Image (cartoon, rainbow, N blue to C red; front, side):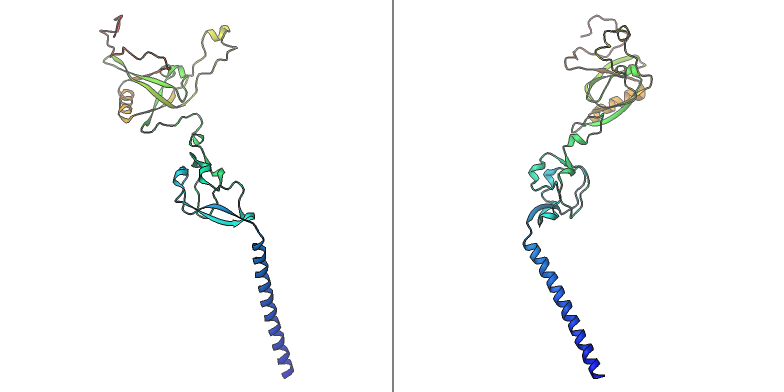
Length: 247
């Protein structure tokens, strides 16, 4: 019986020693592997970053870490200067590596068919029949004049150089250069039959005028190319509509 107890104790001691040796060897192997592995510096998100955050604001939201090269994600950012002028296109969470693919120029995030709203301006949308919106030929980026008519009756070119940021609805079909000389094209392109929703960017004080005109009168938009003559306008009434010189 004593012999069996001694044998069992000896086996237990050997098992413990074997485990210690195995763990020690494994740890040593990890250390030897790390010692022979190249490391690189990466930028890691330290604080939550919301989509749309400019790169100029990231310095306080990221930190530099040193990782084994095999753990570095392809496309990682090593210098914020490489992203100058860009913004985050998605939310970034703490712990993730900073990747160039998560950033883009602000203009690339703009919804197709729209243009960016200049700083300080508001947007207002008006539903217009095609004839009140230059036959439906307006596109985002155009500049228009806003004419307001009331039942008094009066009409006035109230606003000039108003930026169109979006046009929703069926635009008039474009006529190609080859078609421009045909008899069909000379008769004019067919206009859209449905109303268009035109969004304008303008100061709030001018948005008030547009809304008032839409609520209590009628609006017309005039396409204003760069060389359009915007001088000499005044409130038109039955008493002066036939004057040859309105200046």
